[in-house]
Each structure stands twice: as C-alpha cells, then as structure tokens.
Length: 172
Image (cartoon, rainbow, N blue to C red):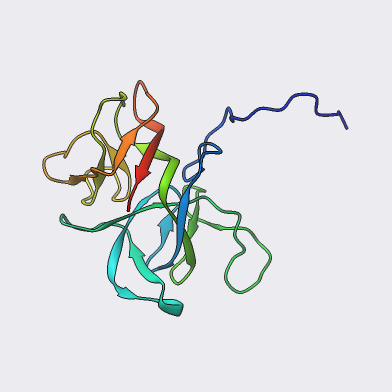
C-alpha cells in the first residue's frame, strides 16, 4: 500500500450536498417528509415531525419558505442493515421518508445547477418539473415561473454548462 505524501484542503471531485470548505457553517436536523436527494434545496413543510424537528420537503409550488440544502452524509439505512445511504435509480444516495436530515442553513455547499453559472447570477430553486429538470435543483432564472429566487444565496463557482456548482447560503 503506497503512503500518502500530499494533502489538500479542496477536493477535485464534487458530490451533491458536500460542504465545500472549512469555513464556519450552521446546520439543523429536520425530519424528512419525503424522499430527498443530497444537495436538493428543501423547504418548510408547515408541520412538526419527529421530536419537534421541522418537517422538510422538496418545493412543489411557488411561495415556499426556503430552509436550506440537504447535506451529504454517510448515513446508515433505516432498519440497521449496515448499508450506507439509500440508492435511487440513478445511483445517487438520498434521505428516505422519515429520516433525520441534516440541512445546511449557512455556509458553502455543492448543488446541481441546470444551467451555466456566473458569479453575479441570481440563485433560483426549482419547484415545478420541466422535462428532465427536477424540483429541488438550482438554476439562474425563473424558467417561466417554475422556480423561485433565493435571495439568501449566491453562486461562488462558475460553470460552462449544467452540472455541479457551489452556492453560499445565509439563512437567519
């Protein structure tokens, strides 16, 4: 086995829901009201879940209360079968219904952007499906009222097309 001789503070490969850096963050534990992929934007679901934690869901209509982004985690499946995460049909890990979910409220996190991103673009969260684009993902415009602007977020990375990008959120 080779010995590791270099150490980096940044990773070459990104995954949805990864915390981007070592800057201070603020996270809450919420109750998953539906299946939620890592890196999806989540909203308050107007109810209280397990142990008085807020219930969160993927946005399904305009006018939602944005709570943050679902963080990547190496979680054990419900039922104690010692497997990590729940893998969906696209082989992405996700939180299952009823899981305790870690939600980032302040800090930098990796998300999926449906479009090319520039640092001065606005941040929008999709709430209505459009072709192959999913509620919970991010973009730079309203897509004819299918996404709402998130004023507490800004892009901190640039992309040349759809793909993984980093946003910084600051929700009081």
